Image 1 (cartoon, rainbow, N blue to C red):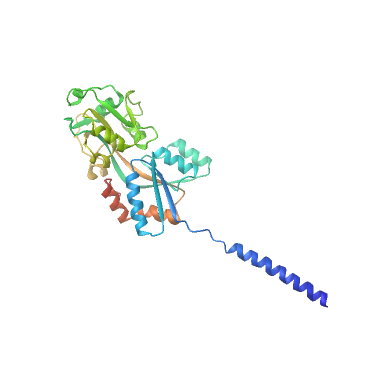
Image 2: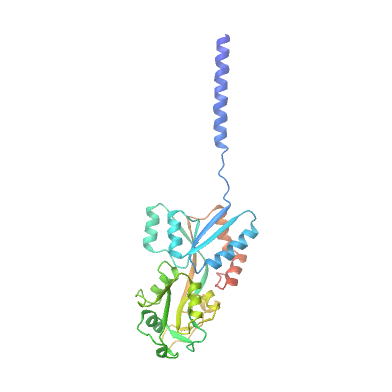
Length: 287
């Protein structure tokens, strides 16, 4: 009888240990995410930094790190799993979407604002407006002197973003009709660097997000869709209603529908407070 009692006690003890281990496993809850990484568009880096700063102020203990490098760099980081959010000034390309499918990823696109892509010159340049066709000819090198387009005689010094930039891709597709840039075009690592170059040279020309056209010693050109069309200046109203002919959406990409802290941040970007920041930084809010 004692032996039976002893065995029962041992069995009960083993069961209790196993039950305790099982309960311990069930009690394991993933730690709540407290930080977000955002990589991508140089055009959007100031905007994302402003949104991140306001979000962190409203959510003590949460961290949001923002780095640029270009839209292509941000999309690559999203596909490689090295960023939580990609900020992009262009839509994902078909080859990038195909690569995402191969990796079992589901990029989710959210538009947080609009941007008028400004054609910028030095404030000392008397030229005030250009048609889309003239802009195309200038950046492809078939028009090489300012006197051909209403400026003082002098060689046009073309500045462009690098090929990993979403701004470069958008400009090449929508303004150059996928044609090549002039061979002597200077490729700049950021829009800020491009603005700095134009600020110091009266014959320089470049392009970038409209928010950058209000900085330095540069001015934004009025743009005509066609030679006889009205010349339109990039403003919030003309970008939103499509009157300004070089306009584009600004995207955030996540892997699938954003949830948790990432979802909270994406929602914040399109909230009344977030959209107020979009406007304050110089872009066109969605509402």
